[in-house]
Image 1 (cartoon, one colour):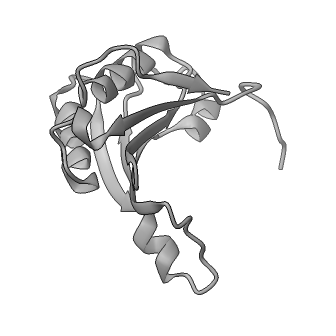
Image 2 (cartoon, helix red, strand yellow):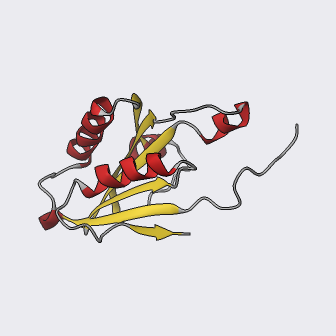
Length: 138
């Protein structure tokens, strides 16, 4: 097996939302919002929803930070090109939705295609009314 690097870093985008900043009151409601965004996008395909919290809780040696109340991933593909087979390792995409004591945290990895990042940023920012909340964590 060979190991190659397609990108040197995988920056994570994160959006922290206080409960008072969004009309959504649960991880499930936010996941439904993202499913609707994905289904409405002409190039996106919803794949699955993964309950990371339930999965980790069911593992005998699993550990969940006490500040995490719920955690799911919305898994989808928004690839508009497949220029080589190595890019399959970067797909599909996932948006993480966590409920914390403070509110909600939305996270996703930066995609190599700017148009995909724009869509995910727009979807995330659609949860709240302010546009300066999304930050990149490298």
